[in-house]
Length: 143
Image (cartoon, rainbow, N blue to C red; front, side, top):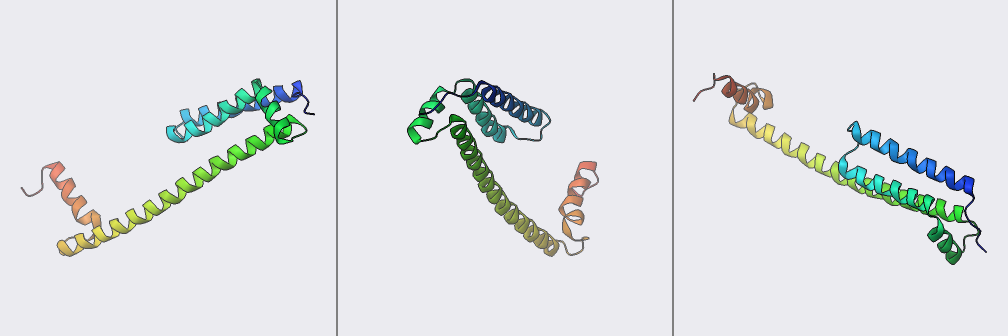
């Protein structure tokens, strides 16, 4: 038989959820976290705040699944959600790493081609296209 959630444990869960949401909002405000990423983390924070305030669905599901204490079900739910978020972050990081690699290769090819087109220049972006762009902004470029 599943017992109700201990009031002290419930208060602690509410406090931790509020601190978690507060830390996320501070990180978002200081631009340390993108809006897109913060939506995922904030939704998990509000989900756990809701579960902490209204634990009845968790208590019911804990009994159905076979947990003896609803706090164990709450912890399992928290860990599962965080694992899903970490997996999403890992997939995003892997995709961005691949994109950075491709962009770096493209930049290297462009720098090589630029060096072939303007052999008299100092080479690379600084002497080639970037130098020409700076000259055109200053009005001293050839027209």
